[in-house]
Length: 363
Image (tube, rainbow, N blue to C red):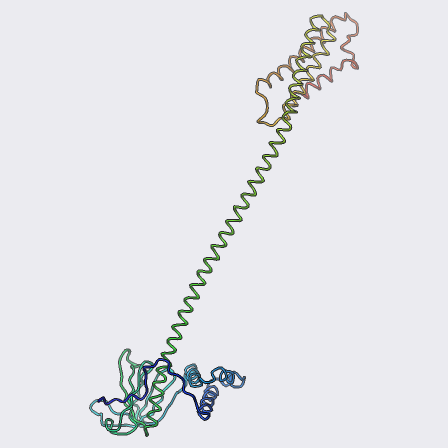
């Protein structure tokens, strides 16, 4: 039979909260108020504490643990006895012991400077019977050293009564369960925070991808609109050119036909030595060549006639001008001193002919 008697069952991770009697309920509520009175009286005055008591109705013990842990308060304290180490196991000395909500159990010897502490957040407390311990109210606390990392410790204490011992064991085991629950809550919060962070990253990445797709869609839409506008403008230019081409080409052909016809008439008049009629025909031919130049100038660059046609227009203009001047001189010589018919400014404006030729050169 084992010498240890387990005073509190720690196999159940989340024991059901016992139903409190009216007196226990009032004491738990008063303990919560007392904690806030010493640690944060502003909340007590503002009514926040009463709101917390309503929120944790039926779980006042859990609320008390949370408040004590939040403000680093003491859970239970008392003067008891501590058994000596190996070699002095039968020696018991008076000590003041304080169990704090942060999981630290501290003790200090009465009448000396000896003191110590033990971390019971993952430890346990077991009750001893009188036969084994040699006195009533004995219990043992297992934990880890706060001064020396990862060192297991055992502390044997004794209260005045077994009832006080059971209260201390219960508080140690309750504190252990509280920290297990706290660790699970923090682990869940960490997982939730991680999940939220990952979701935010995915959401942000998705939003960035959506934005990139939206920008790409707008860019493509603008490009398509620009291409459509360019095609529309090109089609319009092509249509305008197609509409103007027949008219311009027909004008060029008609002007060239007139120029050739007037040139042939001039030569025919020259052969009959009708210098006046020949001069008029050549003048009309020059005007027709000018109209041909203007028709060429009105055509789009890719629709203009070949260079041979342009050379024909230029050379035809020069030859008709030269032929007109020759007819003028011959007509003046044939007049034998009379007023040359071609010199009459009103009937034969040579300056006008030269102006027409110059206009043709400017085209």
